[in-house]
Length: 155
Image (cartoon, rainbow, N blue to C red; front, side, top):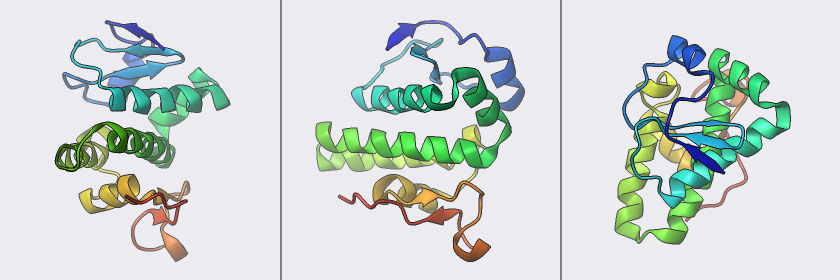
């Protein structure tokens, strides 16, 4: 993965949807863009590599278009990336630090940046328990949280 210390080529489209905050990083194809600099931890790199793989499946431009326009698609893509990130966290952090970081990334997934698509509690379940949101945005039987059982890799 290449790293560039500037905005990605589609930053104007991104700014139409998101309020970009310091520390935000972007993956466009095989390049990670970090316009604000900052530390790129191993777990963050694992998260961003997941987006690279996701983009290869349908193409970078199509992925970004759908990511920016479709909340359910965005939630599904981020859920997978945060699950991979948490898996890496289990490898490199002790229990105390991992718990701290889990709270931090669950706050990101449930926060303003992604449009408050899930609650904080749902974000914890998605990340830690590998419960995947349904891509159509409905919960089981069309009600409740936007989650359905995933492949279950619990700590």
